[in-house]
Amino acid sequence: MIDDKSEKQLMSQRDFLMNGLVWQESLLQNYRGFHLNMQSFVLSAGFAVFAVQISYISQIKIGDALLIAPLKSQLGFFFLLLLLFCFHFWASRRFKVVVSNRANAVSYFQYFVLMAESQLLSEERIFLNFKKWQKGGCAKPEKYISTDGEQLRLEGEIRDLIYDGNGKTRHLIDGQIFRLISIGWWIIISLSLLLSIHLPF
Image 1: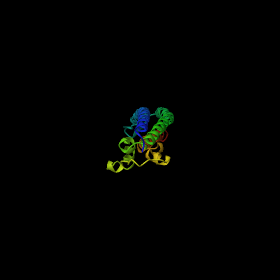
Image 2: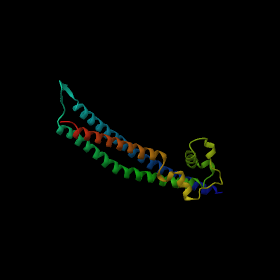
Image 3: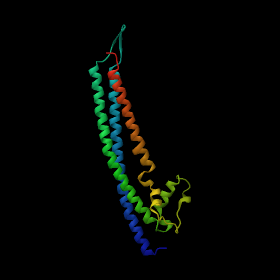
Image 4: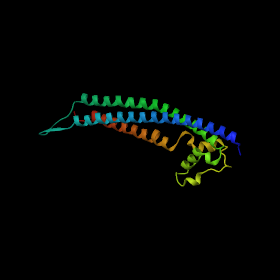
């Protein structure tokens, strides 16, 4: 059991660390949101160019003859898409580093906030109880309220609560969503190339 003076010091330390956590989390969400918006805009531009390419090669029947767009025009659309794809690839690699650094900073502050709260009385362990509830599947909050005698002494216990920098939301947004965007780009590029070189000119 800690005395009142030590508890106040721990709470002051926890509050200071929590401010740092909020700061880093805000930066993380801003960078992630900007990256997602930018990639969505570039992908939309790619779809627009591809749609114009498809429209441009629409076959116009004149009797038995077919008039199809020239090969050079088709390659022009392809290289424009390739340029947009290169920008997507370059931006993804750059922002992946930036977002990863911010995510690690968030995990850093989460770790020390949880370490500080594990030494406080149970009613003061707000963030700790929240992370335990979140880890437990977000059901029946009363099950995840820690007791006064419970302390997270091992580093592994803390890291288990913060997913060691790989939370579910981070995995979904930073992993799956941007992976789907990349897949979308590969599909567009492949189809554009096929339209450019495998049509009867």
